[in-house]
Length: 112
Image (cartoon, rainbow, N blue to C red):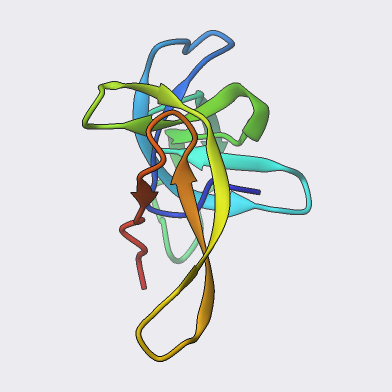
């Protein structure tokens, strides 16, 4: 899966088509991602010690990875990603993501 946590993506299909947001979580086994502010659902929460009030909460639900595309901030559009093997100064090979249209390397703002 080429989409990672911290990437900015644009929704290309579904009820939230055209919205952009940051990927909060990647569910690799289910091939789904959770995007900030996209696919909002209402969830009824029972009162608990952590949340004594309970009530109705709005939260993001997973969306299939095929319905999102990487958002390139320079061209302000959705782009396809590919992989390229690059060699650094020490001769170490690393696999990096590249923008297929421009060939530029994509660096993600990976959260820790």
